Length: 480
Image (tube, rainbow, N blue to C red):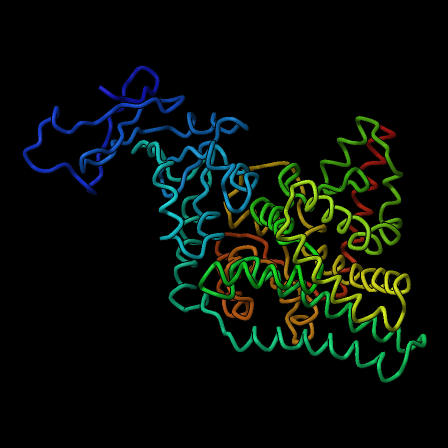
């Protein structure tokens, strides 16, 4: 008899009501083969129209399968072995691996706009389900909070907040083309003096930043219902408009959304030991006498190596290295079209080497804009090791909002609604303001901190949090 052993008492297979064997079939006629499944039990494979028999598992057993060579996760109480699938996962192997050994239901719903389509790929991975006596939530997560959040998502769906306003995105894309044209027109009409050059650089930097916000929408599959069209426009915007790589962006950014502000899982808090972040890392570094830089001054040298260098140096070196080493020729071809277009446009004005200096200057301006906007929502928040929080709590602890205004919406690409964006990444950004009051109400109900700040205060808090972390490091370095 197939069974999963919990202690000394076997838990028998349970059969769902789907795809039952025909009436009158006897056990010998069902032709169910038993195959090796890995640790924790066995499964029967579905044959001859009979339903797969599912093994029951406890959370204790599931949580053991969280290594590089052995990954299980739970979605809607079903247990899936994603060990081999992780290598084929369109979102990258790391994002799905980050949920190994735990419930991934809310993350699964958050990242996949077409659940029916995705479930087709899940069927071969199904190995069992949670035992009846096991709670739906792992690690003592609050069931009421989780269920309330899922009810909120259902409300958003009923309100059609995942439906796109194509006029909004069409106008947004058009304004990028207008900016690109204005940059060329400025030099054509006024020449290449210092003032026209500076004005053109500001226009191009604005185009680059706004292209970045728009590619972000397509990258999250939040514009078209068809993933193929989202992917195509994503490649166009990040490749042809910015000279970067869509696959590189996906690899980094989806990990950030899956586990924001969690060390070893969120690439955005991997600061290569240049900065120490949060409350625990500085103390750990201090106790271990790690001093790659004088971290007690990181709030000051941030201005020198943070905003000025992130995009023109670190990001673009990493992007090019990634495309070449991974032989990502499609993304490299898209990025090449950007540089062909750029040099054809600006070499007549500045010459070849002058055009290189000019694009570096544009990246320099863009980098400041990008860093301040993207870090204002996360750096001042909780940054720590994995604590296995529920989806809502994890996102609320690691993100905050900025006050809404027409300027803030445009300036930040609606990332002033960072909380709503992290909770519902496939929701079109023009609907964030509609769901925000309901999110805030849910947070109030469960005592979660829903932070909203003025824009300048958010910028100031970046520096304040870096100083706080640096002081924690210095104290631990000298006294512990």
